[in-house]
Image (cartoon, rainbow, N blue to C red; front, side, top):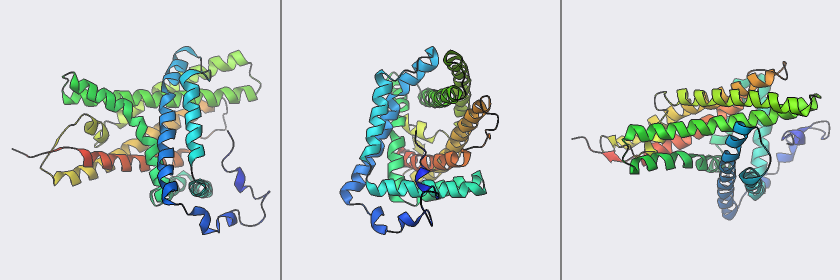
Length: 312
């Protein structure tokens, strides 16, 4: 994968690397482009979701070949990226450069920058939320399926939580395999040895990420989305919706930061087995900053969709 920061190499561009962003017109979008950018996020999210069966199969068998749904999912994600308007791509490039610059002052500053740049830019925010939304579909299907089958609300919520944990473990595990396999080949490790070692690290990392996900969703407010999926009502009438939205947004923000941050640390720990110089916190700030955006947006929306039930 190409380095998204290559375009900011000052060795190939004299002067301020942000000079290319001085023309405001490059950030402007038509209404049609804005709508298409939201659709592009949804398409990318569907592509990521389509890769889930292949990720699980790869972790189970060691076969991560680019075929079937894995290939289709990758192609759909790439198509979603191609759909983005020039204005959105420009905004993403600016954000990436600012995060990289902020990272020189530490991961906390990088995370704060990632959160601020995304939450305050309608183009970046709408595309990102649209990209995350399809990942909720498996949990939604499980929760509603259990409810239809007559299960109690807590069981439906637990089913959705478990589904999310499996998704997180598969995503982190598959990403770990791809990264470490390539690194070991580059270091001259024989292919069969690289496959075996990368698979072992990937399985351990994926399992750790799934456990972290389960723990994170037990935090206060960390199940707001799953409770909305299971149609768990809130008591107190319509006025309670605002409270539920606030609690859902805050709870899911913290939960997502713990979940995604823990997964990133687990990945870095596995990477240290191949590259001892890898920091445990590498990329942690940006990961947690973007997780906060997703948790806040989706958690707030979940609270607003909860059905209010008047107290007796």
